[in-house]
Length: 299
Image 1 (tube, rainbow, N blue to C red):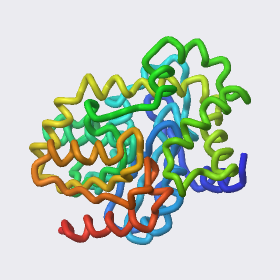
Image 2 (image 1 turned 90 degrees about the vertical axis):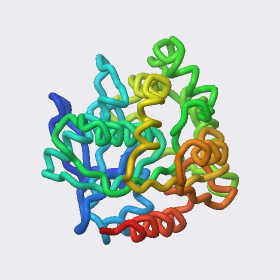
Image 3 (image 1 turned 180 degrees about the vertical axis):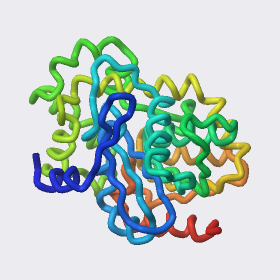
């Protein structure tokens, strides 16, 4: 494994979630900030902004089950509600009952589920107060979400199970890399080394066996859409969307839908050439707008 990934992993801890080992990092001092990463990678997505976040917050960041350095069971029903259960269990494990929340991609759906539970008073591991939410690019509204063709084929058809034995091979890498490249802006494409790091994260602990199963979270976006959106429309938790507009999945079109659906919507559009991974592509801008959101609603 690359030395930088080894260092990231060595700085983490493990906790037991229903018999499975979950990797997480906790670092810093100050108010608790929960980072919820996206699909299909892990907490390493936060590396470009990690040190500046931990200078101000106690940052809690787990790898979701099936991804990164956490357990990747094959016989498992991956779902957004289960990911939310895991995050709530980790907060209970750490004795944290009040957080700020920063979420990206799949993490957006997990954050929506957690918010819906706050609004209904039905959290799985004890009450946790959410002080603010910051959304990065993700499928907030399934009707505006436009996943790539490969993602749809692997997660919404039997092709994922058929191709699973080929995952991690040179062929599968060649198939996946164009989709990853497409998700970055024209000036922020991943380097060869970054692409290799992505593959190492995907393939750790034979994780490519379950990537397509984890990817079936897109079906939960249809199943729970109205419940999640109702919570967002009714909540008093301050929310901000920071959006990379060039994202083909959830860029400017998702931000427009957010403005249509959410009352008094707070939306920040990044440079028009920033796409799906704003925390990697434009870390300084993300931090500026994130800290501004926190400062506007500090207690």
